Image (cartoon, rainbow over all chains, first blue to last red; front, side):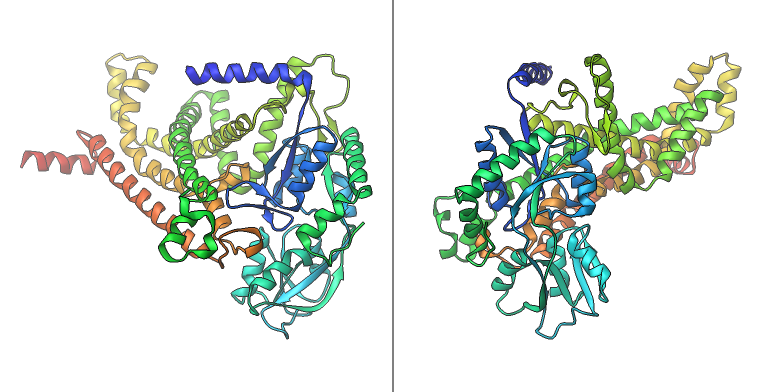
Length: 241
Length: 294
């Protein structure tokens, strides 16, 4: 009974609050460092979290982070369970048909192959990639056999345990892993430029929110704070605006 | 957590481990065990209720029995993962659509705009202004409901079979005594069917225990999600506790947890079975009678 009263009170409170200001719910995956991940305290952290919070502050919005599995991240957005996606999602034509994107907040960069040895066969061997990504689509078009995994972590693990010859993912995701592997993993082949940069995903009907965030991204690009953030999380070699 | 945990890189051995195992992330992991147990505690009786309703309906007169049989056939036939991926979103949209119709009669825009599902802000469930715990509670509620519907269909099939397994003579005797249909059902059929239903139901319970990882599809962070997240390779840039792929150890811990849990369940179910068999006209009931007589 006590909880019931509490819930009713909370709902009543929430109902009156709706008139004042809506909370923007920001969807992310929380499994793709340095873009987004869970820190030791179990909270979402990373480049996109810091950026998203700054964008919300500039747009004077009240934002709340929500984690969602990558596979169902777009269906849950269009169904209205959250309002934005900031999850290292590259802007592509296929996705643009279903949802809308803001301008890119992370420049188009390269994807790369990582293998367990220098001579790993990334061209015709077995290549791991996360399901429903531009990298998976790219591998599927080539000569290599594609195996897909639900999480980025599993794609790298597949190379470590020999299930795949190479993993194909964003260069900036793989770089810290290769550096920390102590020579066990190395980049192979040439980097491949893919995608139109990373943008914030929104429902197609949310044009007002899209304009708000576009303006906020503009202001961060102009005063250089976005570049500072990019360097902080991705290092000096990252492309800047 | 502990005062010596400020610089984990300088620690080693047990001190490091004690700091590592008490990070906020690990606390969330331990909390997830509670979430799973709570889900099971609520879902099991609810699924049984769904099953009972389904089985009773399936036995009933024509239009009602179609409903019961349709429920059993459709839910049992659709793969769980498809159910969990799409049904929950559909369920959520249905709730919001009903609220939309009630709360916003003057709304002039279409609800479906292309791919987008848009209801008026007052009809959102939960409201977008609601605090995070309300959203999580709602996600949990949807999870419970979905689990109950899915496992209810299986339970309905088990109970339907169990109802038919009660010896016909029992029903005929009840009718001969002049009991009405309802009385026969509640006083003769239902008390006797459990002994036939329990083996099937205990199977379902075991499957339900192990089906909880599907929770993450519904946005509820369960123990398997946390084990995968915590066990994954951690590079020094993003954590104070870098380590390699430790998923095996975390899954080993889960294995132990599940084994203990299923073992305890077995013991409890055995006792219930012994209690239900008492005085029943089944082989096991007969054995009990002889043992007691000897």
